[in-house]
Image (cartoon, rainbow, N blue to C red; front, side):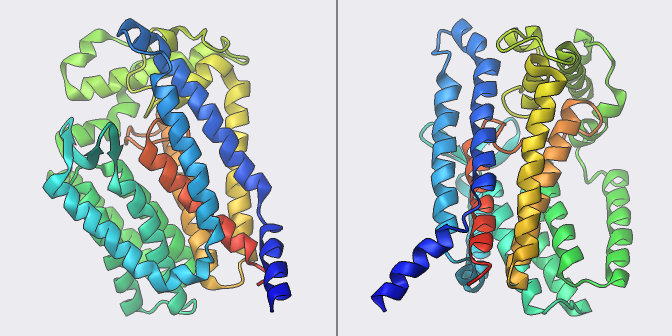
Length: 383
């Protein structure tokens, strides 16, 4: 028995996806460098250490990598029995943030723990992925109308709680996860079509009856109205401020050209012209300093992560593992597409971080945990 146990553990780790894990580490390291480039001059002007945000993000990435490996070490099949409990805990955290959460810029979306802000909505994404995967897997690939209603309730609770914070961007990520899991999890074409019609009707109603706040509508439409050059007069209104942000981002993108201006040589980045550059608009730091070539390399790394995640989904021995990987893939793909689209002016400004690139510990750790689940699925495809 001892010999069997000794032989089993290394066989699982031999299936560890080094390419996927290595790509995550590279993106995380590149994100640290870009955050440093976007914040160093501003911090120097404030009399702070230029490496303030670099050090913080570096800690987040290291902790995230440890979380990723730790989650990979857990047999994902055990998490199926714990999925609803994990989901319930994330719902509790979302409720708790209304009672004792920290409020900033009109949003009450995180807990202040010393100098660290813990954002429950990021971890709710993982909780929802596990819950939806377990629920749909129990249906064995054929969701009935009642089963579909159950899925919508599971997704609707965190969606509404996060939307009310308000955090429309994270709520949209949950919606993307829901759609992806339903597509693979056994929903019929008729149910999917009905859900599509319902989504259109509710979206129209949200705009027409004022469910969306004016500033949320402004963020969603700013990309279509943003001028080609920034105009300071736009800052007089919330709608104009969003258009100004997008215009500054476009200037940074165009400054990079094909090869980029070089590390620490981007004028928009060095002079802090791009608002929220270390978070929402971190891609502009890449585009300005490394140009089209550097942007393509970053996109290539993201594409590699998504391909390996899809590969893990296709190799999974069970439906639960497949759906977990599909949920993580949808979470990553939607965030990358929306954030980069926002930075280049073709998508609405939704406040969605670029995975492992945008500054923020909760996003980094939750993303790493999600990829840890994918690694766990792939590692156990033969067991």
